[in-house]
Image 1 (tube, rainbow, N blue to C red):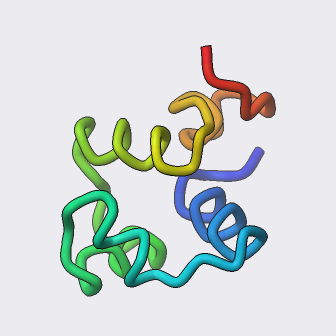
Image 2 (cartoon, helix red, strand yellow):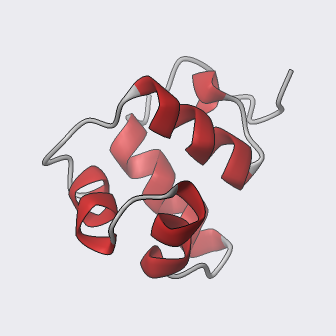
Length: 72
């Protein structure tokens, strides 16, 4: 099952979104977002929530707990 880090990369690339655009939308620096994608740092719960909202997927999907991306 995919992990959080691979999921955010997969979603972002499939939608042709730049890292800087995601970072700006969720209120973190570009470098901080890059750390999330490279699994150098784990995001806080509020950041995970912002990412789920931004990508319009469930937090469980981002976290690899579900293969269903639908928000509840």
